[in-house]
Image 1 (tube, one colour):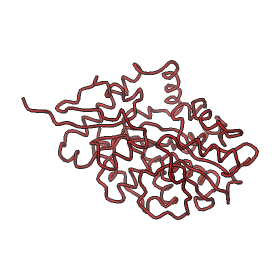
Image 2: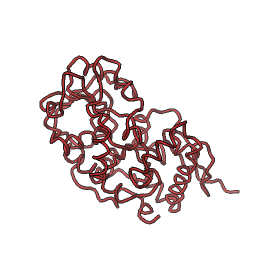
Image 3: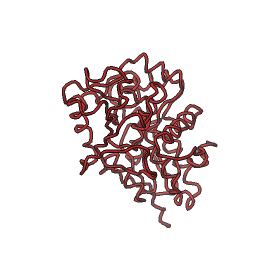
Image 4: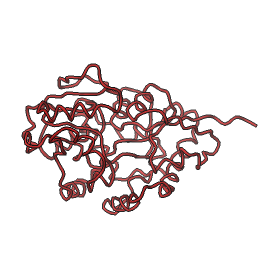
Length: 329
């Protein structure tokens, strides 16, 4: 009996991929091996960019930068960690009271090139007219991949803390008034839309530190008005793997769709209700494994933001980013 080709994949466990991680969804003709159980999100992205896995959950912004520099990766229409980033923008109460006051101040980020940070800067640009070059930048963590020279000077913590430990330093500097704001990774999905989640407590360990934008009605209006629903993490695969196994992309997409259908078996109490509320507000399932028109608009917005931020130089056609099956399944 012929040995099945082994395909390695790394992704952070969540209800929408757990059935795959648990081996409950076979990938016909392939040995689908999960290898992502020992890495933080940042380290997983870093290792994938170094070519360690066939398939991995990846920073969407990093994928765009890697593609522009000729690195051979292709996205699948499988999205994790998405939602508005307003609640990821923190300040210290009494030190900054309005976004316009950020101009000329130092702004912190856990990584300059992180997708969540790119989205947060894009929001500040579109909704409050704050350009990337209007503020100074301080980065507390290790970058995953930046391919271009940046248009701003970035002060960095040296040495950076281990992956996953970047937020506490930013929170302390905010509380001390040394930063005007900080942009971090955090709660996604329905908690990003409607509030709750764990991020305020994680950042609020120092006095006065809280989200700069907390008005749920305003956040909902923004999403409905712009039809932008940020995609933070995306599943990507090595292009040479897709070429070696032409039937693989379609099988993987369908496998993740089935995992999404089985997510209800893994939801914690209240999660099914929260995700249903998110889906009802949007009018579509943002995790269904389908590239919608709203997704295309969101990805084009992220591309535009990264150009303004000096992270990419040109508009990237969506057809160059995704496996061709993303447009036909």
